[in-house]
Length: 534
Image 1 (cartoon, rainbow, N blue to C red):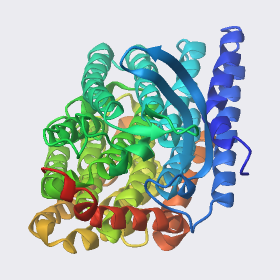
Image 2: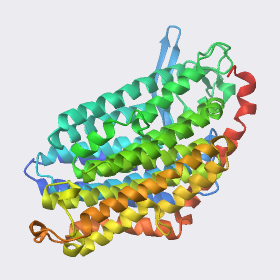
Image 3: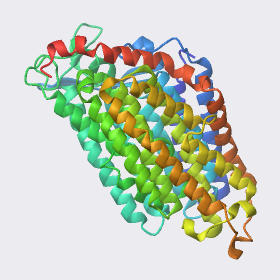
Image 4: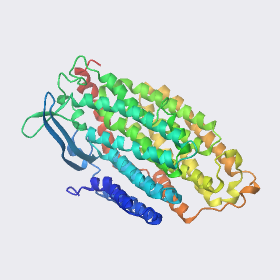
């Protein structure tokens, strides 16, 4: 697989599908849906092939040889530009143990979301064309190793998501879409400013020995590549690295979302179609956390060491605030949306620990949260399609009428609570083990444990409200799951149970890369702090 561009094929295959959809007549709705399903199905197969050929022993931070399935060539080359000299931008793709897990998550969730989109009847051609464009943008973020290319994919995601919410969403879809767009665009501006500052602070040596500015993420992780005059160089006594770190963190935190930048998420979830909510919670929220791990931590390790306590604090706030907000909801979908805010707090807490167990739990929590929350939103979508209401007080006793559906709900709910034997347990356990291992955030971690109790409270309350008790007469005509709904829920259930029983099936891919990250961060004080005023 060394010379086969499998990452490019995986990333841009949806663009081929999008072009084919645009060629097809708009009255060919079934053909468009089946074509999208075939494209996303092939992506799942490609991600499994990548896992099969993945080398567990490779893993590093700024060493290109530690990344796998690398593709690199000159993409943009403009010379003779006054003081800038040459603008060199590479098409640079590669993955490690952190990104390979998220690639698998993206392909699985996208395939399931395609099935969830099967009941779309409004402008089918436009919906699935934008859906596949979004697919490419998400995967591109996880495989790009050039900051400029990363930013292109990051921004590309905005366009299809804006229209998918704004055109196919609920009654307040325009408001939710604009709010999502503005919040994310604000974060993108912060990221862009830092990206430009880094570009003019570090140089890369070419084969002929000349030095040029670069967007190479791996180059930014080595202090020897920075110039003394670079504004974000640790060699510069007047550098602005701390401010740049905060700006970059805000840019990624908005996407997670971290309190107080979270308010766009419930609106987007409630108004978005079910399939888009599945992608939003299953994949898009992970892009922010991935950006912090891939860019913020290794490029600014000396700053990360100093602000780890504050990252843990924001994680605790997310966990407790999100859970309390979820408890206050009557809307089924809004409750799940706030639960996402809470559970992404565990990701932040694990990252703040800077320990092997904590970071491993953080990455695993991203994967587990993606599958569990995708299942939860599908569950809400199924009942909404039948009843056209999400008010939990309007239900009661659904277990009597829809026993199979209720069984899947139990798996998803108890996985979200963190029941041993299901995937949510092991990732949260690793996060807390790692966080308690860091004395700086031990008190914060202790308070964060309250999130487990609160999470169990609102999940069990919702289950009792909707599924237990006496069935109301108006719901006695409800039917249980269809074949398509089985196809959506069964794969996610299998993943949740398998990882819960045998977590090593996924942990083995990330171990080496996480260990390299922890080692790199531990040495940051020696590597960076000796030459940085911070």
